[in-house]
Image (cartoon, rainbow, N blue to C red):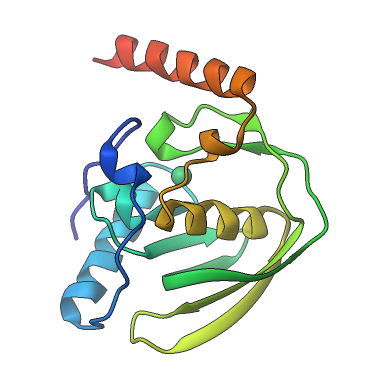
Length: 164
Ligand code: NI
């Protein structure tokens, strides 16, 4: 398995709508394994293909007891509201409060191409929404008010300048 390089804001791939996954072969299975490996190495709870430079509608997650591969994901049900913090490996894990639906139903294909639906609440529901957004070229900072977005991006720039 391979730890892949994380694409960070403002990489163009993060803002693109991913292509549909239409081939469910060994190569896709290997990619998913590498994405899990990368996610664990970075101590994330979800990782989408655009975050490793691939404009594909695909994510992996292991969050609050739900571990899955989601190809061609869609949120087909959402209700309630949760407050709470959200962050992203592509934005240096800088966190900001962001309201999301408390419960969400994900419809997606697994690594073999089988369609499934999965319901979740709380943190796992937040993860469904965050990762599906990535597949649509949306970062969590796009959902923040301009003031909060600027705060997150400034902190991210500062982190990057210390690191590089
Ligand atoms: Ni993210």
